[in-house]
Image (cartoon, rainbow, N blue to C red):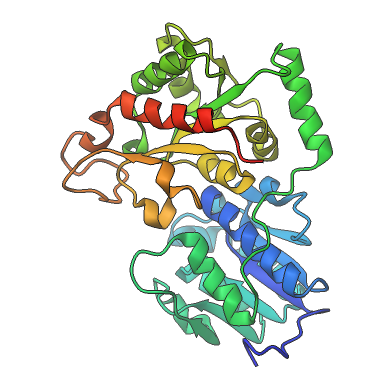
Length: 358
């Protein structure tokens, strides 16, 4: 019986479906910790987009990953063009012989993956979109109103009988930490107080102007608050360069594209603070317990803000917030461009003065 104290999944096989995005995959790790805490003998296989698979490699609560190359399957025609690859993927799903499929994504494709796995028990959200509910054997209600993604995932694991996750971190190894510390030694930063900044975001509407980031970094440098490290994926290199070049007092080290996802988690562990817009690294930092000051505009922090640190979010003012649009719907990115740098500086200084929690 689902949710019964007598339910025993030790020795069983569970498919956890959470292909993307980076922040959501971070939140899903907490679900895997909850499952393993309840049933240490449960085998957890995570279905994930190939680009995010490296983040999960080394997380001890995940026994195996099954990667899905999302880039190969864009549009209906790709299903026919890549049908041999799709058949091979479905075959690998069924070879898993899963007893339970847990769909944290809640979309048509992920619901189909649960069904194609042939798992006799398939759980998903009752409020799932795109008709994915038809593929579940059990639908789980989430609390009404704006609910954070992490809490929605907790509702699914609770339906199986799990308690709240005992931890949420990405299980950074000593070797991964040493690699980052060696990088910092080579840059002459060993023992230096560090402040990370991530100015990039996938959505154009989520980005705070580089000059504003630079103003905050200069103000922090004037207070002796630490050496800035600029982080981000390689495709955000131009934005990162703009921030670095706009600084007049701070001397940021641009590490954009120089770390993988797990190395980034290790790096953020070494920092006193992350200053960021709504980005994947924001969620990595929150999972690692690094204090986060997040500048948010078009998205709703109650749903997707830095989990456990929503009081550190700084927002602008706009009558359309949260519009949830990739591009501003007509007000010239008002919610981000008109957000004053001093408000962000004050929040950052308060956290830096308080010190990172041990």
